[in-house]
Length: 635
Ligand code: COA
Ligand code: AMP
Image (cartoon, rainbow, N blue to C red; front, side, top):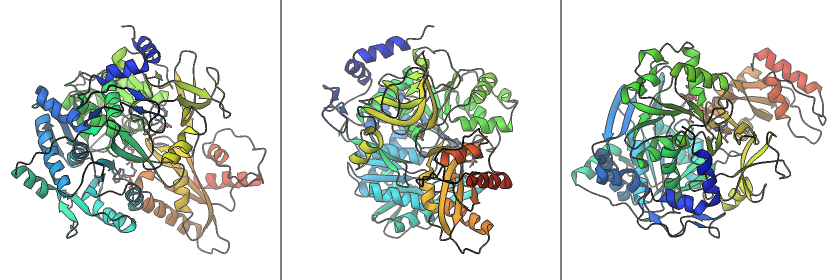
């Protein structure tokens, strides 16, 4: 079948408002949009300025009303705890309504923020939808972050309530969440009035008298009293959530998502990009703490009337490298979305793909990969072992949905290895040099999006319009800066090669090396430091720290290195995978004092490098090389 992509993309370019008006017809509005885009409102304009809606209504209630009450909405599959449970749309509605009543009882109203700090349990999804129902703005914080990161998010979003759990379960260990929660609340300058805490059977926790509410007891009471909570009518531009993501400093950016534009974009993407029909089973093997989890575990599949899988486990080790195929076969999954690193982990343990043959994957149609650059070897391995199209697609927390994709629903385009394919409607992509001049096809530069951004993208940063402008809009006026470097080839395919800032991608998790440097610098014996991302065969990149000690420090370097590793784990969290630190005598710098991180990275990755013309003292690079070789760091 010839792809309809080129005609659809051209149709959007010719009449963007008409295109989004048609897409908006797939959503149930309280008051449907008369105007599609207001260029004068907001920082760069506003989508559906006069419409009103509710996201929970579209994700849950309308399916119950429309005949899907008995269809599975959510399948919880947790190989790490040995539990499985399916919730129909009818059951999902009952859970969400009861929890919404409990949340409302804590004084939460439309516009209030609620932090959700939970592992991959169904209650995390119920909490997101309950907030959406009430018009409260949720902010999910990934469980692998430490108390300090949670505290930063509490201070910035100023939540009225936190919904949390007693623990998470990681391979070989229980992660007690409650000490992290209590520690963060104690650290933050904002006072959190109430917490709702889910007691998990693996490990309970003590509740704080007068502050903490037992999740299960409160929900049971709300159900027993037959409380129902209606979906609150919200402006399309009202925020649905704030999701914090790494910026270039330790202060994360609060990416805001609206209700109306977000629904329109996600609903459009499910059919046209992912090629999924309502009623089918879609699985994003991510975490609700990341944007992929927000968009493609929770909102998009439910908006589209699909069954979504909530998987609490790892691609390997829970119990083996066949767990993904077991889930696909058991639940009839038609499309899986995950990060390339998960496939590198599987391939590492089962290079011949022997586990694949043990399962019936006859319903499985497509594998989607995103979160980091998908290396051609991994794509080819997956294609060969699974016998389905493997689609690399590119997006960011800021966009909430793919910027570029190979739109299966419109008819697949030829795959070009190393490319996340072509821009989706709404995205007018350009590649600019540092002075803002447009570059020819095939030339590497700054990848930018001509404004306005499409529906569903961030309208701003939480309480920080100026930071939004300076981080994304000021450098290339009229464009949104993706902070990715890449090029567009003669056929219009994008190639995304690297970040232009200090963000690194560790096992598909986005982290700021600048943020880690701020933590390392706090160690009392450290005079100065640099953190860079170095290549890792499984995780793509891992951080590596270089520290120069204060003069006169007599303690052994090994002790200090261990303390620095511990400090980053305690402050940023285990997810940073910060395990390598080298004490060095000096850091390589330019004559103006800028640390040569790029050159250090090339040395660590054993790539060819050129002596920077502006280097202060070339001998320092030999010292760095020797230190890395001595420690066996790098590939
Ligand atoms: N709560 C507490 N700790 C967590 C956590 C959570 N929710 N998630 C991860 N961690 C911890 C892990 O236990 C690990 O700790 P350790 O240093 O004590 O071993 C550390 O954070 C790093 O975790 P992770 O990144 O999961 O690495 P891993 O080595 O355990 O597993 C992979 C490697 C590739 C299997 C895993 O990273 C993975 O599945 N990645 C897919 C990523 C993904 O889905 N990204 C979303 C974008 S689509
Ligand atoms: P996050 O906001 O965590 O989704 O991370 C977004 C960043 O991950 C992007 O800016 C890219 O640097 C990188 N990324 C995501 N998907 C891809 C992809 N398919 N190819 C290359 N890089 C990607």
